[in-house]
Structures are given as C-alpha cells and as structure tokens.
Length: 550
Image (cartoon, rainbow, N blue to C red; front, side, top):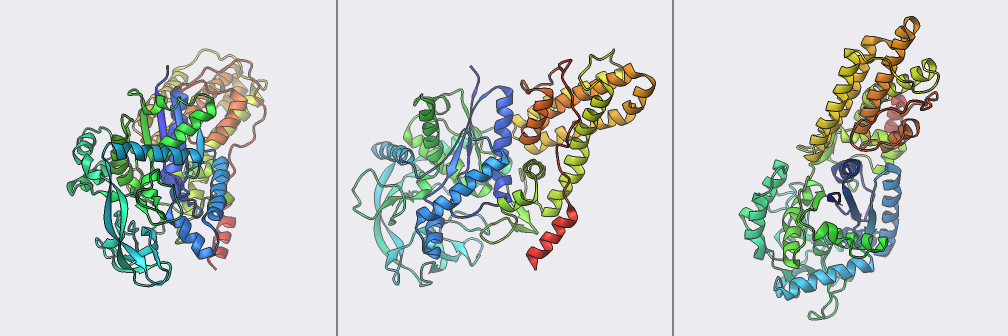
C-alpha cells in the first residue's frame, strides 16, 4: 500500500480577497507538492477551507453593516472559483462553519478538558465603554510592545510578525468606536500550552530537514516558554462551547478552532467517501507523513500551538514538516490585499493565463527569504522563460514531427551518442528534481525542469534536424524522435507546476504514468500543434497599470 501523505494548507479568512502573496506563500506550493506526490504514487490527502470564525470577518461585517455570514458567503465563493481557475487540486476545500467542524472541535475540547489541559480562569479583557461590549483581539489596535509599530492588532503585529495579547498594546483603541478601552474582569477557558514546553522542545529539536528560519523561529519562542492562552471569548460569532460552565455569551475562539480544521476536514472528506474511518490512515498511522503549508506569520500556530493541542488530544500524528514560506513583497512592501499592496488573485487571473501565474510565482517562491515580485516580472518570466524556452521547444518539435514524420511518432533509427546523452540528461533531471521535491525545495525543482528544457533546445540547435531531414531523412527523423522523447520526460518535471498545459500534452502524447520518462508509443498521431502559452502583451499591461495608478 502506498505511503499516506497529508498536505495541510493554511485556512484563509473569508474576510476579503486573497492576493498573489497568499498564493505564492501557501496555496500554490501545496498544490505543486501534492501533484508531485501523486505522480510518485503516494496516497495524498490535501485539505483546507475558508476560516469563517476569524474576527476580521466580524470587523468587516460591522464596517459594511451586514452579517458575518454575508461576508463569508461572498468570499468563500470567490475562493472556490479561483482555486478552480488556478487548478488547485484539493481533495476537500470546506469551511470551519460546518456542523462537522463544530463537532470535531467540541470533541477535542472535551478530551483536553478531561485530561486536565484546559482550565477556567478569571482575566482582564478590554471592554469598549461606548459600545458596551468586550473586544476580541482584532477589535483592539495600538502600539506594538516589541517594535513600536503604531497600528499593531490585538492578536499580531504586521510589522514585526510577533503574536500578541491585546493587553500588551500601548495606547490601545477600539476599532468599534475609537474609544480607549478599559480592562474588565471576565472568566474564560484557558489551554495549558505550558504543560507541553518540554515535549514540544524535544520534538522540535529532533526535526530534520526543516527550513532553518522555521525551526529557529519556533525555538526562539520556546526560550521564553509557551504561555497558557484563553481559548474562549465574549463573542456571538463562533463555535458553541460543549459545556455551560461559563454561562451565556461565550464562544470558542478562532485561535483554537481554526487549526483543528485540518482534522475536521479530513473527517469530512472520509465521510464523503463512504468510509468514515478513512481519516485515521493519515492521523493515527505512524507511517503517515504530514506537511503544513503556511506563511511565516503562522509558524507559531503550526510548530507550537497546534502540536501542543494534538499532544493534549491523544495519539494523533504531529507535523512531519512545516515548510513555511517567507513573504512576497511588491515594491518593497509585504503583499496585503487589505492595504492595497500587490495584485489580488483575481487581478492576476484577469491579466495572465493560470499556468503563467503558476510558473512565475513558483520561480519566485519565498522559501528561504522574502521575494520581490511585480506585474512586469511576472510578464518577463512568462515571455522570456515559459514561452521562449519550454513553450517554443514543444511547439517546434511537434510542428517538425507533424511535417516530417507523416504526422505521427515513427520508430527511431540507431541513436547516436548525442541522442543518448540528451535522454540521459533528462532522466537524471527527473531523478534530481525528485530529491528537491522530497526536501520541499520547489524552486530548485522548477529550475531543474527549466534547465532540462534548455538542454533539449541546445541539442536541437546543435543537430539542426530541420536541415538534416533534407539530406538524410532517416537521421533527421531519429533526431526528432529523440527530441520528442526528451520532451516526454521534461513534461513530467513541469507537470506539478503547469496542470493546464500538461493536460494539453497529455492529449497529444498520452497520460503520464508516473515520475519517469515514458517511451513514446509508435503510431501516436501528432497533429499540427497550437501554442501552449500566450505571450503577454507588455504594452497593454503597462497601459492598464498606468490607468489603475491614475
């Protein structure tokens, strides 16, 4: 039986449009990785969904004078459409608003409560005296205690990335009324994260092959120890508590419930297959591996808090790897749809082909450091790399094969040393790329794919089959067969990155059977091809950009 691989992907708040930074940071890397794992033959379960309980949703609903559900319906629908347009291959994309998610969250809460990892405590929480209500973290803004950023949120500072508690902010102000909030006593359930300091440290220290910035970030947190945190709030939007100890007006807070979505989505998927227990293959199986694709601001939740919650819930598998990406920046600023920095996903889809977006972003995945990108850079990569190197190679070899080989794949003659060498280069590239994929080095895998396409182009340019067919038809046909065989291997390398153009090639050359170069089937019909990719009109793109800035 094949190895189970869980690909768990960050849950976006259904509070606004996502931008290309989000796509490059978590969603596209996860899809590329999952597609590779499926080609290798592993049993992949890729899950995520829209987080519908985040306070950004209620903040936006208050601003627009609508209900939180109105906001959720608008943006969850948008996300689902965009994932489909981009070819993201979910096994399940759901929401945290399902009855299933509520039940799984409540079940985990009760297990941890029974085990003594949850307790009740009185605490001080900000209260808006004008709005006459307690303020969840996102409803409080103020000065970050770590970097002095004046517009830090009550849960996190966007400037330095530190996770915060609202009471730590300097000069706090309410987003509801602008008033200075006051502290009032309230009772909440707390998760005893401090119970797991030693176990988390031992587990983190034993991790191998993790990105240094991820492991260092998490270990840095542990130097000051994990702090117990309230996992309920005085709010009306969220999951009901499974106990009534605290009285009315309390809900489970998004900090605690969102990460449980990975487990609840797995259970929802299993139920949809007719085998409700199938989720256990990924969660209770020591042979299973789990990869969590998130941005670097989510490192604490996935390397510290979620593992601690899993430890407190029983024998559930801890993350195998958390290949968190750094930030994508546009003109020096962190991509942010709410602040108008960078393109939204929809703006990207309006300007570029899906495979073009996927290629350009994959070439710039911020795996080890923040990466700068722009519309012009996306267009350049599409035109000068994707179109000029890979698209042109496929088009001219298919065209020459159609013209000079009776419109079909013919049996080759004896291969020369040059022919054998280029096929060996491609086969070695497939092997090398696999090592990069296994290490979640996706940019490096894409570089290998592009280098192999360049090598096939160099082979063609050196042997010039368009000339050879005029003087030695059999030799010219063998060169073309070799080039097409090489393309049959190179397309395997590009398949995880470029699903739409790969599907076009599948229609011509047949389905890819796995992570290897298949032999061409003699007699396969090769019609006159249509280009895989459209070149970006730079003048039109620049004109549109000028209008939007005017």
